[in-house]
Length: 246
Picture (tube, rainbow, N blue to C red):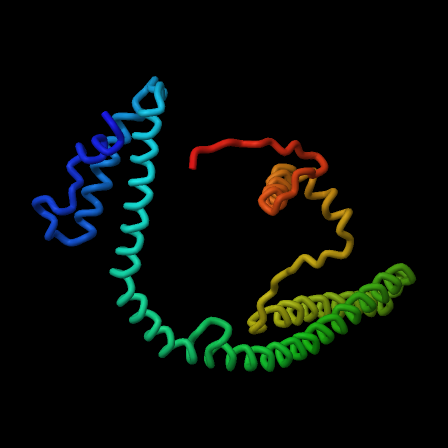
C-alpha cells in the first residue's frame, strides 16, 4: 500500500458525497479518519521496516498537520464575529471599569491615598494616647510598689495611701487596655506585609535550602532558553543533540 493509497482509502475525498456539509464537519471527519489510520500504524510493537512504510506514515503525519491548520483557520473565522463583538463591548466599558486604568479604579486609588493618609494619622494619635496612658499606668504601678515597700505596717494612713496608689495604677492599666483596643478597632485600614530584598546572597542561600527544586527548574528554564539561541556550552550542563521527525 503506497502513501497515496493509504490516504485515499480512508475515504477523505472532498468531492465525494456529503461534501456540501459545513467545512468544519468535513475537516473533522477527515481528522477522525486519519486518526484511525494513525492508530492502525501506531499499534503496539510496530516499527517501520521499509522506506515505503516511512513514506506512508510521513504523508499521514503531514496530512494531519494540514488538517490541523485548516481547522484552526475555521475556528478563528467562526470566532471572529464574537471577538469583534467582545472588543466592542470592552472598548465601551474599559474607560470606566478597566482594572487599574478605568475611571473607577483611577478615582478610587486617589481617594484611597487620601483616606489612608488621614486614617494612618488618626491611628498614630490614638496609638500615642494609648502609649501615654500605658506609661502613666506603669509609673503609677512603680510608685505604688515603692509606697508599699516603704509603708510602716503600723501606720494605717500610709497603708491606705499605698492602696489608693495601687488602685489608681490598676485603673490606669484598664484605661490603657481600652485605649489600645480602641486604637486598633475599626481603623478603616488593612494590614499587609511585603518582602523587600536587602541581601540577595543570603536570600538565595535560604531558599536554595528550602526549595531546591524550584532553583533547579529555574536554571533548567534559563539553560533551555540559551540553547534555543544557539549556545552550546553552559557551566553545569551537558548539551545533548536530540533528533526528532519533522
